[in-house]
Length: 57
Image (cartoon, one colour):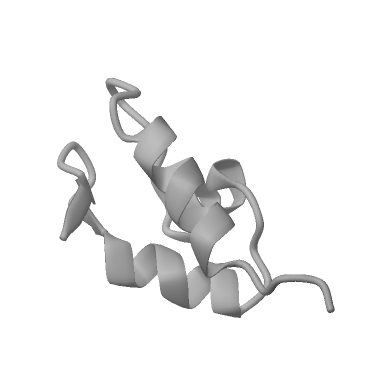
């Protein structure tokens, strides 16, 4: 699923980067060499990051 149409950012990319240890949308966009354009994607990206992040034991 596309999360950010402006940058063609997919859900799978976000989840993979969260598994690598990134924990905020700024880090993810920076790693991918882009930045949010219109901002519509940010709430969805944040929710995906929360869901994909490992939960404390």
